[in-house]
Length: 323
Ligand code: ADE
Image 1: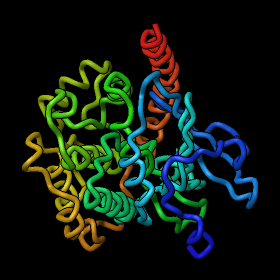
Image 2: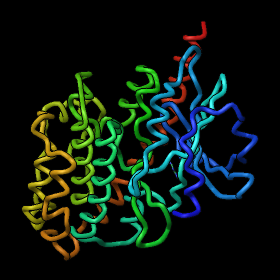
Image 3: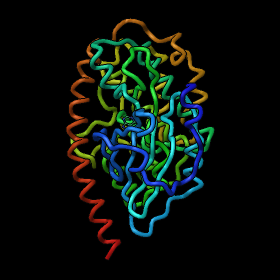
Image 4: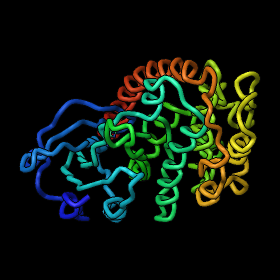
């Protein structure tokens, strides 16, 4: 990372305008409160991702939080380079993860084993461990936020989009949860106090999907998904889980635990033989790619519909606040 060493300056919010230094490119993704685009640094012609957040009137960005995020540096975490703030917008310049989403890559590859899943999962947990050590809770860990740095087969996997939810308003936070309840810990859905263990729950949901190819709390409506999560209603359905190693199932069971205090932590997960690749089976998981393919297609369709719905609601919230 030699070329970047001068780049990563933990600068605070800038007076210079985003447009003076960068050229905006095409859209990469859209969430409840922000849109992510590709952008090019004019001086170096290097590509970055930029997260553009439309500010609510009177809202303040918490400089201390941004400083914390600017200081984070781990290979499994998308790096934040600099931040620009104007009256209307915040532009966050982020490391550009050009390799695409984890689940898309798995589907493209055709077949995979428990060992492949463990290798990806280990990187997610390494990133989470680092965030948690630095007092950052992701709060919105989901497949869309798990990105490969490059198209290379050996590319590093990175966690994106962490630590931003505290800076956005409670209303937008609620909408964001409504957008994707599937990965949210029960205590978050209940509006209770939560801590790092909320991310561990989400990692359990992701691990379940990686192996099973379908969601543990699947239901036809968001309300029903909510209800299943709150009751912790999931199981290792036959035949999908029949040939999966007990080490893997034990890990899923240690993460999808209703009581946050009893959930396994990131350092504990990293000590598990399955995660280390020792106890993970090498043979293909039968049918998982096909199931994951249809799960992915459904997820993207739902994501696109939700983005439109949420953008409309955010506009409504903002215009109400302006009244
Ligand atoms: N989508 C969201 N964040 C991204 C990033 N940092 N790089 C590429 N695509 C993204």
